[in-house]
Each structure stands twice: as structure tokens, then as C-alpha cells.
Amino acid sequence: MSRTQTYSIIQSILAAILFGASAPLAKALLGKIEPVLLAALMYFGAGFWLLLLKASRTFHSGATDAEAGIKKADVPWLIGALLAGGVGAPIILMFSLRNTPAATATLLLNFEGVATALIAAAIFKEAIGRRIWPAIFCVTGASVLLSLDPGGKWGISPGAIGVLIACFLWGIDNNFTRNISAKDPVTIVIIKGLGAGLFSIALAFSLSIPFPGLLFAILATLLGFFSYGLSIVLFILSMRSLGAARTSALFGTAPFIGVIISFLLFQESLHVWFMASFLIMVVGAVLLFSEKHEHMHSHRAFEHEHRHFHEDVHHAHQHGDQIPSDISHSHPHEHDEVEHEHTHTPDIHHRHSHDT
Image 1 (cartoon, one colour):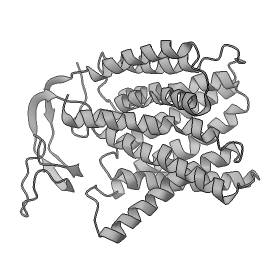
Image 2 (cartoon, rainbow, N blue to C red):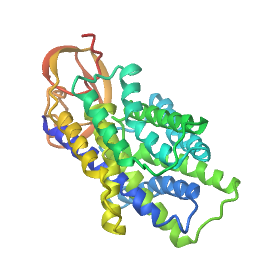
Image 3 (tube, rainbow, N blue to C red):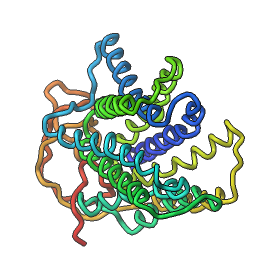
């Protein structure tokens, strides 16, 4: 496993920790803020605080980002991700929950990772090997087991189908975002957060949902900054090297983080299914970590832009200004046609199809 892949695994796990913390911490705010408006403020906070942080850094240091900026060709993917995951999925989920038993909805929401993997493999031709599919289903199955509520009311209804559609839309969001993951992740999250947040806030006002006090509103936006904003930035960075399916599988550990935080903060009991589901999740994680994918493959000649170092076989180009190889930077650069063999994952340089 390369150093870059190790960093990406750490990034995806940190993203899961931040996102997993959102449920128990948001629970503490639900007594003061209605659920729809809470979600809207968290989305908005993800974009707003990142924008403020980015502007402050630029103003005080005059530093320019080493990340590649959003270009015209990236806009359709960004708009598609915003509409699918930031607008469509939450709205469909909100209306679906009205007619779906809580136990059913909780279980069905675990299928976002499977939806992401299926879309990545079927539509975007992402390479998913023999170890990855069992790993994805282990992590998802463990989350399902963790979500079991034997005493809850069950039922399959049109609302349940709506929950699955919402998961499918989030899967589309993940894959669309993967296609622009080489670009500045902070800018991506700012646009998605502010766009989805403002839309959802307008929706909340149209539904006459009362606005909370200023203190609780600020707390909700700060929670969104950490649990949505920083989490999605780390998720995007991880997708650069691991692809959508592998990153989503690791991100699927988030429910376990939420259970542990609930146990620590609210003294909620760890029910009997926790250890069983945890062991299944460990099996899935071992399958992911032990994957080794290597074969002879070809790269077509192409040009793109992303943050990079000059320390791997794909970035041996020279600079007239002699930028050191250990300093990250971004600029449009060309890759010559090459055929070689080495261990790799579906990163931004290895999204080739696999016919065998």
C-alpha cells in the first residue's frame, strides 16, 4: 500500500468520524430546532464557515491555493451533485419519512454505500475487484445489523421506495463529485453547502417552520462545518486516490462512530447487536486494507489539472522555475501515453476500464 493510499484511507476514516458525530450531537439540538431547519442550517454552515476560513486565509497570508480551480467543464458535474445530493435526496427523504416506519427508514438509509458502488461500477466503469464487493457488503450489512430495531414498527410502503430513491440520489452525488475530485475540495463544498443550505432554508420558511434563537442557529452551523463541511472535504480528498466505491465503503463506518459517541455523551447502552456488527465491519475493513490490485495497463495521452508533487511516475515533467518535488502545486500538465504495471487503485490517473 502506497503512502498516498494510506493517507486516503485515514482521510476517509476521519470523514466518517466527523460525520458519525453529527447524529448524536444534532440530537442535542433537536429540542430547539425543527429537523428540516436543522439540516438546512447544517448544510449552510458547511459552506459558510469554509468560505469564511478560505477568505480569511487568503486575506491574511496572501496565499493562493495549490488546488486546481473549478473550470467550465466541471460545472455540470457540480450542479448535478448539488441537485441530486443537496436538494433532491433530502426533499424526497423528508416526504418519504412521513409514511415510512422509523425502523424501516433507518435500515434503508444504509444502502447509500451500495448505491454508490453500483453506480460507480455500472455507469462510470470504476474497477471493483473480488475483495471490494464483499468488503462493501460487510460494512453495509454491519450497519444494517447495527440499525436493527426488533421492537419497531416495520413495513414496505411507497415511502420506503422514496428512501431508496434518496440513497440512489446520494450515490449519484458521490459519483458526480468523484469526477471533479481533482479540483479544490473546499470550493466544491462551499458551493454545495451554500446552494443546498439556502434552498433548504427557503423551503423551511415556505413550510412556516419557526427559526430558532441566534445561539442555537450558530451552533447548528458550526456542527455543519465539522460534520458536513470538513467531513466532505476529507471524503473528496480520499476519492482522489481510492475512487467512489472504496471511499464510500470506509465512510460506511460512520454509524459505529455515532453509537460510540452516543454511549460516551448520553450514556446510551450498547445493544447486543453492536459487537456482532462491529466484528462484521472489521472483516470488511480487513478486506479493503488488504486489497492489492496490479496489472499491465495503458494510459492514453491527456492533459488535466490537479494538486500534485513531482515524486511519482505520473509527474516527471519539468518546470522552468524549478519547483521542488516536495512542494505541492497545481497547473495544467500533460501525460504522455504509457503502458506499465504497478499497484494502483481507481485514482484520478487510473480510472481505466477492466475488460477481464
